[in-house]
Length: 430
Image 1 (tube, helix red, strand yellow):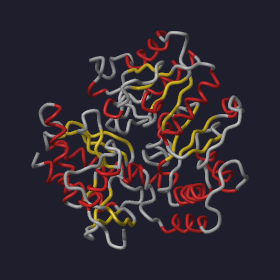
Image 2 (cartoon, helix red, strand yellow):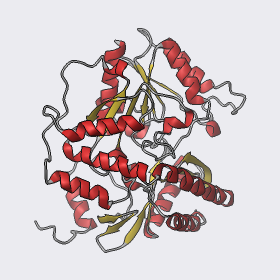
Image 3 (cartoon, rainbow, N blue to C red):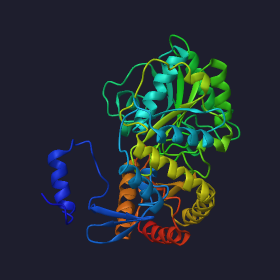
């Protein structure tokens, strides 16, 4: 079979149905075949251009096919593609050193793997080794992976498809002040969401858990941002019980929220940071990083066939160089504030918009149009209409009714404003 010419969406759908496991789903009733990317745009098999407002789910921070990143990958591919961690290579240690310069202070030891899911699995293992405990806490509506343990740590029901999840994992309500799970009002709630964590730790059979997994801003949970007091208070509770704090920064890391890492917004240092996505510039990467003290508990032999391989490490090094050199973290904060303000004005005009939330270039628009089913259907119609208008949004949330703006950090301001103009026209039809 020749792929010199695009085979087209229908042929892909036919092959997908025949050869892929059915869980591999896709957006859109009428999906395009994406064949090329350049900067903040992608192109389909008919030559149509779309503004990519999802960035490969927070991966393409530098945009598609960034020339410096592409050159770095190609140079490495032509030199040394792969060896595994059982041999000495230079890129992996250079990337670890560069990563230590941008991670929170005191987080300096890293293990590289091939995905965010694998990073969270590794963080769970590390927490178990360090504490000698085996249970965990996590937030409702969080997402931490698709593997057996990663899915068991996931509190978002759509992605929690395992009928027999791993035991020893307890969930606590995620903070959402607009829809407080405790029916309280912000300012007079006494941070009931944090008190619930304290109660859950005390109730854990067999002693405190090893760690609590959190996404600083829940991505697939609907771009949920906690109140400013949440993480500082949570840190105090976990420290009191000797429970490690694992920050899953797979989506939020590397400038996505307007800071290098989202936890920086609250000046809270996690015990373990997990990440990936943007760091690899489109090549598969994951990592978990921690302090010298915690890292010292993981001494028995370990390796990763693909983690930190020369190609992904070269990509990561160039990515960090460009990210910092070009001021893209600060740019994300500036453009994100502009986008959020512009969308907030739209929310005042359209009843279908329940809430605008997010940080930096990680913004969610919750659509409400009746009951949960009607709201999800309205979000789907808006998603499809935006695609037809040349804009690719994300879709998240427990009810699948949150439309997501997560463009490359290099996106142009006129492009963003054009997307909001198109979005407003579509909101008017809902």
